[in-house]
Length: 117
Image 1 (cartoon, helix red, strand yellow):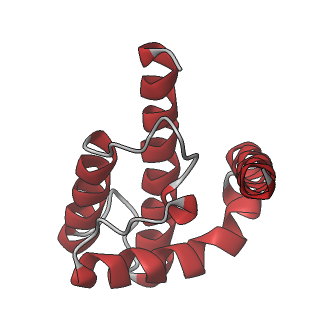
Image 2 (image 1 turned 135 degrees about the vertical axis):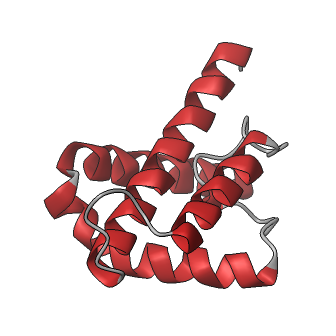
């Protein structure tokens, strides 16, 4: 995979997690303009982990990765964000949500095919 493709995947992942954290903060913390400091910290942490991910070439999203590189506290926070925002993304960001589902399904099929061989 070319470096530009990896960078594109990395940016797409960071954009998706940012949208999900923004939605979570807006709906759970009542932030209308921007996000609260705790959610901003989580967003920066998630972007940093994505930037440092050595598996970007072989995975689509963190949820498909076998390695959990988040600190336990941050992993719990991002899990809450994903559980809340995931089902709501179709209403707030439908195009991004559909693309995410399609890519996730493709990745799971690809992994299943590789495991069969």
